[in-house]
Amino acid sequence: MSDPNTLIPPPLTSAAEVDAALAGAGFAVVGPQDVAALAGVDGAAFDAWRPYWTRLPPDAYLLDGGKYRQRRHGVFVVDGDRLAAAPHRPHWQPVDYNALHGGIERHFEPIEPGLSGDPAWRGLITGLAARASALKGAQRWFVEAHTFRIDTASGIGRPTPEGAHRDGVDLVSVTLVERHGIKGGESRVFQAASSAGLRFTLSQPWTTVLLDDARVIHETTPIQPLKSGEPGWRDTLVLTFRAGGFQGPAA
Image (cartoon, rainbow, N blue to C red; front, top):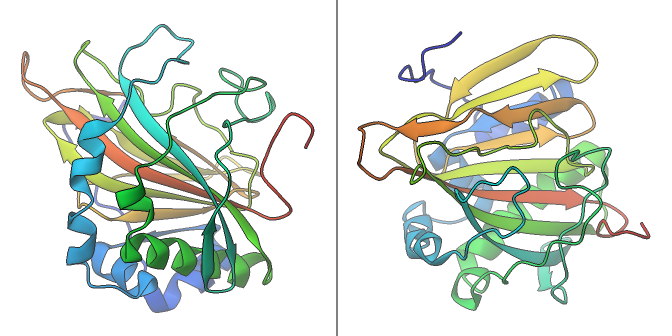
């Protein structure tokens, strides 16, 4: 069993090598400067986003009885270098991909306009959509964005209460926004077709994991407070890219 106090550094891939890593291994971990390069922005532009994670409503759909997750949700369509907001819709996943929360429409508050309208937001989503096109072929991408805060107010927080999973999309990105006062939160990536896997800890804000959802399974281990009685949280931005349309009950 790994020590939750140990931070295992991730194997970083440069912006120039991301497409080859996704094609070869099915995943890549990209450091903050290279994420900014993929987005075509100055890395400092991302730091202005932090306040949006302090205003996330509680997730009312946690079926494990927990109160540790806050979130918002947004939907977008990328066509080339053009990003457009889609009409707000519930988040839905099939049970095959999310045994805990699949099969139900989950209605979350939309991402605040100040964030979704920021030029760096557009740059990040279109830059990562280009990685999806490099991996799967150029096409329109249907993007779901999730802003998450997992906290330790109740003693433990679970970033992935559904366990190791795939999302039923083409490309997944998980970006660390902030890690504060916690232990645990280890990222794990497994090959779907074998037992091969890798584990590491995201500690630098804006480090991003990119995952070919058809080939790898991922999870993040629970978090606990670093010091008893002191607040702790882990903030992330999760983006999913899917060809052909958004997931829904009739999809």
